Amino acid sequence: MASNPAYSISRRHFLASSGLVSTVGLIFPAALFAGTEVVSTPGLVQKARSEAANATIDVQRLRSNISVLMGAGGNIAVLPGSDGKLLVDSGLAGAKPKIADALAGISSDPIKHLINSHWHFDHTDGNEWLHSAGATILAHENTRKHLSESTRVEGWDFTFSAWPAGAIPSEVFTTDHTLKLNGHEIALKYYAPAHTDSDISIHFTDADVIHVADTFWNGYYPFIDYSTGGSIDGMIRATEANLSRITKSTIVIPGHGAVGDKSQLTFYRDLLVTTRNKVATLKKQGRTLDEIVAAKPTADWDEKWGAGFMSPRMFTGLVFEGV
Ligand SMILES: [Zn+2]
Image 1: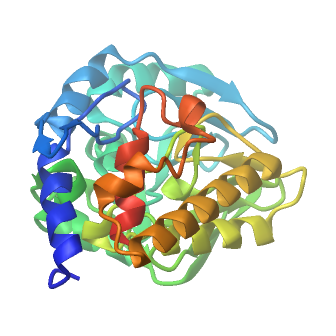
Image 2: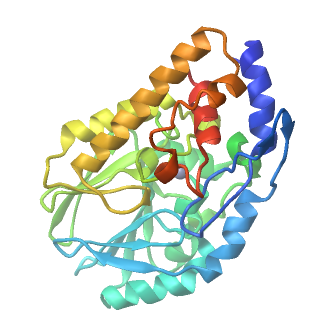
Image 3: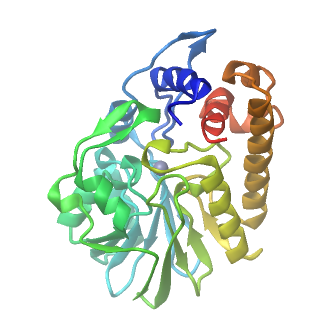
């Protein structure tokens, strides 16, 4: 890819422009371009981490005793019970006091189990304190790999150091893994590379509640981490896989955004596919990223999906990179 001149040009713009516009719960790069001049907003990761202490945690009860905590990084699913609390994702570490309060408000069961939906910091920064509190950490093998070594995310212009020892998953799997906890069966399934190369779905099968990691951003253009294996085509494949496994009554927990359902996931799939096809067609015609952005391939959704969060230009750039 790097030998492609169009890619190289867009890549320089893409890297230098990475920045953060944030609510604490949503992490995304900002597209700050002025013509061909690049305006950089450094500090995306640092800013998210420093703002985490100000997070407001919203606790939403779903069904079958499953709740979701929203507002401190990625969405955190919680299943309490006699086997100890199970969490899906650990949020931002700076939000620890508020997350701890929210967890205590759900039940007095000790924290025993943590699953990471993928390796990104807004889903794993709380690993260390949750491990100290008693959680055994389970994840895909690539999550352990990325947390165990220095890992760069070009889209955030940030290189992460290895996570502390206690934060690293002690149990990993490759394709599928099933747990039985607190009266529930929980099926974990690896997506092929999608948003990263470490994404898994966490399906509370009898409750029919599924956490789909950052393959789904409900109401916001998604970030795609090409540095660790993500791609627009992988995102689309993961979304198709999600749709094939759920019904109208399934509750879908996205990595970011409101808890949704099959109709919202279908809308999102169509948005991804339509954007991909428009951008690919224009790129094949030799259009530059600037020209494609000017053609507004995402115009139908920008008002809602691109307002204040991941910008239309940034999302278009991420699609451009992968077609
Ligand atoms: Zn992510």
